[in-house]
Image (cartoon, rainbow, N blue to C red):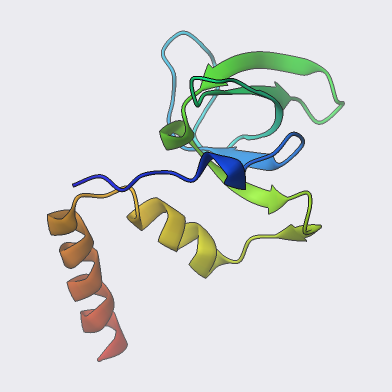
Length: 109
């Protein structure tokens, strides 16, 4: 069962990490962007720029397609554990159980 997303947790100018490759763009997983708009249907406009600040893509994405890595209102980067929790939250209960079992096996080494 997929968990619901709290759409109020994202705001304009939060930095994002892109989770997947979109065939219609040249964006690779891991590229960072910034939320520039929020829509009533729960999607977000995310701008991706190169290292010089030039826009390379402007995409409308669902929350499942990205992770917020910088919280503007709190002025902080999310920790690895927060990012991992946000990603695992999207998994089915069965997949979450598999991740938990894997983590347990790693902690016993």
